[in-house]
Length: 174
Image (cartoon, rainbow, N blue to C red; front, side, top):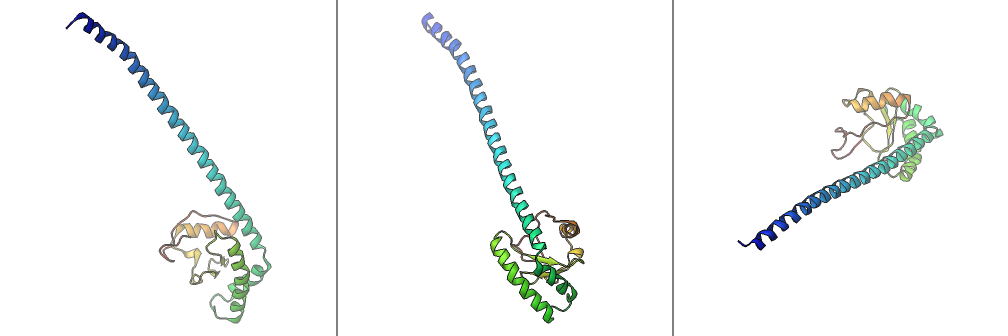
């Protein structure tokens, strides 16, 4: 091998080692920068979504407060509670019909609400705009989430965690 070839290989090796080091450092810096940028974007997105969720629940809470003051509910909830064991009693039928008018209209405006239930102070569902829930007793529910929601709901407006209710259809959520 000639000296010229040896010198060329040696200069190329000496020149490529810093180039390789520079490339590795540049790649590492870009990688870290991209990761930090994506992480920041995810944090901003999560914060924005959290704000939207909080705004939704604040609005829902206000709607619940407003509906608690409805004359129709104040008048008919005691009637439904009084005749809880006789769902075919004429007063109960009349009360449900009056509630259906107002609460179905409310549900049509609040499109995200899938069900509106009125519960007696003892924990029994006395009204639901979805059939088949009248016999449910939240105070003796097999689900801790329902018991907690009933207990806390007696004190104030309370939003429980989302859970599947196996007593209803397989696909529905409470």
